[in-house]
Amino acid sequence: MSNAYIDSVYKNLADKHPGETEFLQAAKEVLDSLEPAIKANKRLEEAGLLERLVEPERAILFRVSWVDDSGKVQVNRGYRVQFNSAIGPYKGGLRFHPSVNLSVIKFLGFEQIFKNSLTGLPLGGGKGGSDFDPKAKSDDEVMRFCQSFMSELWRHIGQFTDVPAGDIGVGGREIGYLFGQYKKLQGEFSGVLTGKGLSFGGSLVRTEATGYGLCYYANEVLSQLASTSLKGKTVAISGSGNVAIFAAEKATQLGAKVVTMSDSSGWVYDPHGINLDIIKEIKLEQRGRISEYVLKSGSIGCEYQASKKVWDAGESIWSTKVDIALPCATQNELELEDAKLLVKNGCQMVAEGANMPCTPEAAEYLKKHGVLFGPAKAANAGGVATSGLEMSQNSERLSWTFEEVDEKLQQIMKGIVDDSLAAAEKYGKKGDLAAGANIAGFERVAEAMLAQGIV
Ligand code: NDP
Image 1 (cartoon, protein in one colour):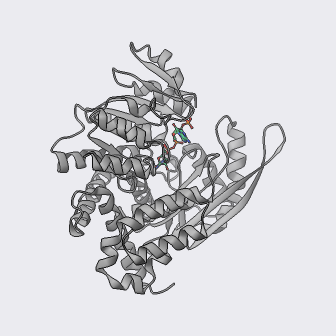
Image 2 (cartoon, rainbow, N blue to C red):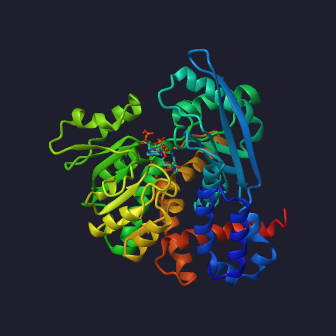
Image 3 (tube, rainbow, N blue to C red):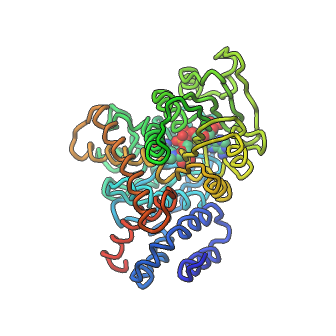
């Protein structure tokens, strides 16, 4: 880093939280890119803006006890990090996955500040979750866990305070159980969670929004920076959850061919294009494994490759020859070796559907070698943007049509591309979508923090 102020803020953070590797990785990436904006405005340093920005306003850690189907008591850990409320109530998903810890939740909450700001909606940044693993649990077990989790969380959230949503391991089923318990404890029906079922205040398009938004973003970037589109492109997607499935659906609708998808056990390659009906049946209806795809599809030339991690070096999903790569599974799933393979195979664009799926080295390599790089906080902001639209509908007690919401989502994603490119150009980083997204997101939050004084 070449800026003394940024350097000292990051050093202090790293000294204070040496074990929080994911959070430090996210903070460093953002801080580094803010240098031109910090240089241009002395007031930011005088107001201790960055020191305040990297410190969550509140972090709640709690015990979640529940009883499994065999009658055994289980104990998990719950988290909610309320990072920044300068521009609106805290907003960000809940993740249920065994890998969840404070560092992971802090990295996600920190990223959420800038992502939410970029949408142009009045949404602050937060994130939460638990090390609970919903995989292989019965519906009753998931319900008891969600009820216990909400028995603590409810006192910290509210429609004007903090509005959680889903993330890895938290889909419609979990949101339903969480909402039911909140309503019972609070004694009120309000839009306290987003991603709700359509029968109790959910918004059309919310389920599809992150994946659809990712493709709208990718198409807009391709159009503005390369005079092309997704039409006719071959696409690799990792993951087979909410984001991956609806990214694959929209990419296909826009004329691309999706040839790979994965889960945490391995990945499939289908040269004829992934049959999404089969993926939805396996992953959404049966909660099964993606390896079943090969037999079920009967597609000639289709292969399954088991991997300890989706990103096993050299034989990962990213070794496939594609025009576009959309990592949609989890953080740090696309490493330097994968980036080298993508470049070697002529990949034109990587847009991040998951949060921080590319390691810093991979992202740097891709950018250096002319690959269009769409950072998560811009590319996957369609989910939270549509959550913001769900909040608006809840407040006005109305439901908008699919077309209305989809149209707004497309406008928001275009706005994010425009704002990112404009900020990048203004600060001498023309065409750098990552720096542009960080600076554009930061400027709005910083302005609000300055206006609100030292609090
Ligand atoms: P889901 O739980 O629906 O799906 C996650 C997918 O990624 C599954 O296929 C899962 O495999 C795989 N996966 C998860 N963790 C790992 C891991 N450690 N190693 C390998 N594979 C893994 O989650 P979402 O689709 O909602 O979220 C995916 C990403 O998108 C996350 O980074 C999330 O933060 C981000 N995101 C999600 C948004 C949303 O609206 N849902 C909004 C913005 C970002 P398996 O089935 O085997 O577990």
